[in-house]
Length: 540
Image (tube, rainbow, N blue to C red; front, side):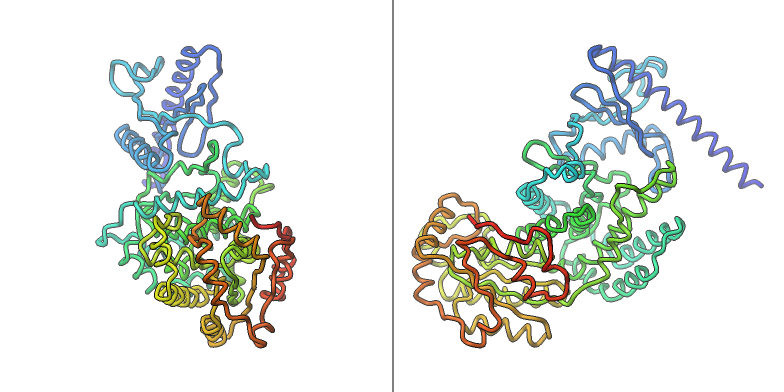
């Protein structure tokens, strides 16, 4: 009985706080409308905040509520979390987040700033246009792949520069990750969702991945991330996709593995029917971070993120008596993620300019493959970024000499083994001029019992020379190969032998491509060969 009385008192106190808060918000709304008579002020409400949209700006107030995972009941707490929201979001969205402003005056006549005691606080933001969220742009089929490429590169830079978690904390530990998955499953069960099979898989993976999580913590891969990278928290501003609305109220939910952060974005792209963009984002992020050690844990993170979104939408539907019509079915996606085909290996083969990277880029979108690029890994071995250019002819020659080639293929072999062992279809995008280089990878595939295919890309010599020249001038690819490198490759290429030709597909990239034929040879019976849009265009 005492507990019931205390709960009743707590409920009455929260209702009173909310009523007072709404009174202040409505007063602030009138104040903003009086300041700009030409435009009405729109009020949006979530479970944790009120947002006033006034002209070119937005003003966000935190509700004085305690929801278990957040506590905004006191004025000091709301000020603190407003300041945290500003700090965290200025990392990725500095043009959106402007300042924290005090609300002063009286509860009947509140205003922004001025004299008097603080009544509350707002996060002052620039307002973005309706329909600009990445989820909305996808629904309108208005998301070019280049936008996702730039977003992935921006996230890679963000993750590389974010503060590393204190090793004395439990952030990102196996215990924390497993407990989070278990709590999500419990929440779904409470909503009446069937999680059979999913719970068993997560528990088993938590056991298997414990050493990997420990290694990633030790390597500094647990950092202060965004924490909530679903498509509703990414906005398209001009030619850029900008992540906003970081998790400010729960440090444990943003001090996470960087791969966990990236997995949320990739998962939600797939949930919205764009698995091609999901795998494009993943591969772009891998190219720019070099964090291939994330591959063993990435699948777990994608699965858990799908369940988290399923739980959040389930709670919202229950609270607001809504249906899930038109929304992604995240639990269905989670069950699809349970089905994994053992990763086969594909080698791209051909001289510079033959179209290997373009073809492999389309293949990874169709198949959910991890692509390893010799041009990227070669530069990484020299301490260079993928887009960094060789400054002299001598530097270019050093990048492509015999010693550099040996080191590059050794690295590609090790990374391909890591990717295959993690269960991913794996594409190695390299020239593979020498038969011995190709045979090393074929032996690795045979030792692992996975299918193996070579895609030989060809084009007429004048076409190859023009592509290499244009690529060098425009500087839009990781390759630094020039006409001299191309001529050297021609002189050293060893043709496929009879055995290799039986496991090869020859592609003339000067003509329209039938990528589904390649996929059908490489991944027969998976359904990927029938993927929509599998016909290729001529690569530039």
